[in-house]
Image (spheres, rainbow, N blue to C red):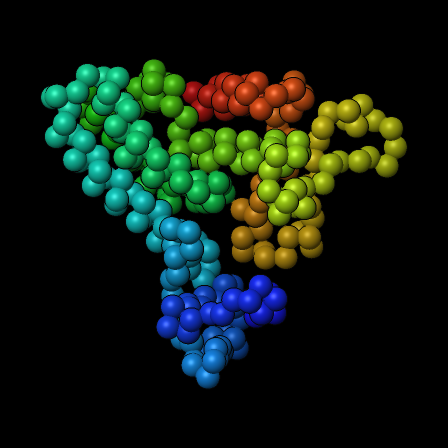
Length: 250
């Protein structure tokens, strides 16, 4: 509220939603009041198109994305007889892949059973382009299209954001969550551009600690080969990271 007043803004109670994230049982009866209007706590809220729930499980978000992506894929399938492979791929990227990639950095660290819902969409899209049956193994098809699976696409997004943050082209709120690894004495690792992985105390939310950017970004970054971390440009980093993740995926 102080920030709102400082920027001469005012919240509209009728359009304001409240979500209690990782709240304790004694906080469930909290009823925030805004301009004498009691705001009920919501089970889900949408922020920038992402569905959030109190536990930040993102299950509702993943289900929503999978549902809308499958709907678009069924529409695209009707166009397949009229499009060549190149144009079919472009349409799928515009209507389906774009949905899978939107805010996909949030999917890093999610349980495989949750991510699998999105992977099934990508598998169906790959089979549609290749013109293969559902019974055929999808891994060679994804490799042939040079598509990273959903889980690795999310890791790719986090690594690119990390590179930008470390080189002054990322948002400040991400820069503030990264710190370079500085050993107490001179070691060869000093020149390898490693990042410090925060302790459990630093990442206070225990239930989502493994998925927090300040934890996930350093862990993924430190697994990269030295030459990838030290890439001189974003384009070269982009290409090398994709090659590295591609080798891991296939």
